[in-house]
View 1 (cartoon, one colour):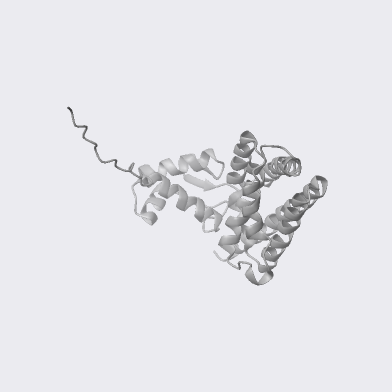
View 2 (cartoon, helix red, strand yellow):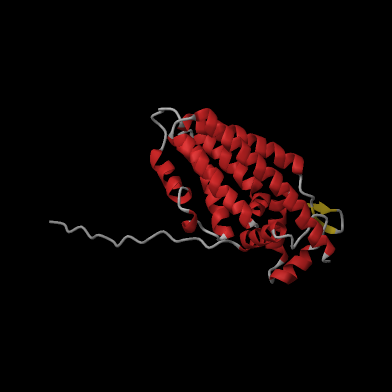
Amino acid sequence: MHTTIRRPVTAPAVLAPSRAEEVYAQLKLDIAHFKLVPGDRFTENEISDRLGVSRTPVRQALTRLQQEGYVEVLFRSGWRVLPFDFEQFEQLYDLRMVLETTAVHRLCSDAQKVDRAMLDKLVAIWLVPVAERSADMAQVSQWDEEFHCSLVAAAGNAEMARVHRDVTDRIRIIRRLDFTKQARIDATYEEHAKILKAIQRKRGDQAAMLLRAHIETSQAEVRKITLHQVHLARSSV
């Protein structure tokens, strides 16, 4: 009779982010926080010295940022932060609008694929008394992104959700600015609550109208704040 020896199951190793990924994340954050302003020029050596890394991960990170449209390489003179492409951002917002309004119409139907549990989680965050609302701007920004992504995901179309997530990633760098003022946080709670109540009542046209107005207001506010922040950053140099 043979005895089977059971070997202990080891958890898969969690890979630490590479140096290039760390540099990429830091530079993208610097652009988002206007530490690197559109038009700024710099060299790979300058970034290497500031972050304490070699030029190889810096070059890899900058190449990735170049592919995403944040920086450009200058012939024999380093790199430059590109101006924000508001026309492209507006096109992405238009696409986001189509995806989200389509999703809320589906959420107001009796479709079998609708994830009601996901909607319940949104209700638990946004339909709360004023005293229980979060004033943490970073937290509300994260919740807002999850709100919109969850609306699309809950509608049950995985491809729509994938495209929407990609759009969300690409506009995040300016969208986060919508939560730098308390008034915008308050407005977000109110507007999200109205959208959710319309969905609960299965009023698709009303939910889509409210959502469209919500996104358009946020888009206009973000553009105004972005231009103001760029002006302040340049003035302080």
